Image (cartoon, rainbow, N blue to C red):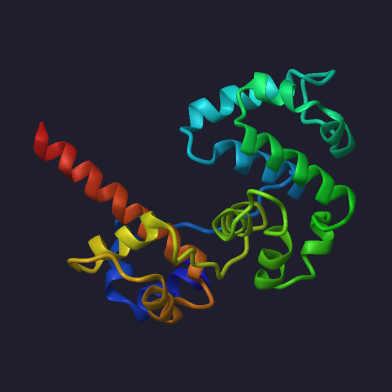
Length: 211
């Protein structure tokens, strides 16, 4: 049992129940992927299913020798029409090129530089790139950097998970959810993961009832 699980179980009976049902979870950083590449992938996945996004990313990588993610300077030099042909919208193509440009000018730094920054400082810095919002950077903090205390209060799944798990009629407002989440600090990333599981449990229950 990790310190995070002990803290959540001890301070919140509902969270303790979710932990029992879903099993243990520990946020771990995603090794070997740069902030630049992670943000490219995040933009590709915006408003698409995982399968569709991965298909487009496959076409994107195929544009470059060796079937790989391009270097930032290569992406900056890639005509927008080629990105559009791979399946990206005009807005996403512009976003990808801006992420590359912001990597080249240092706005989007290497992981070792980000490791010295606070969560909010990283959010402020990375959202300077076109098409990269707070939610995208929060997912990056949670799953690429493995930051332990991130609660994406604007995420519908998090809001709905709280509503379902705690028996509420309405979704909590982001500001209210942020206040509620203070009880889970400094392990809000783990709490967020269990709120997503609450949505999964509810979905599975409804499927079972329909059958």
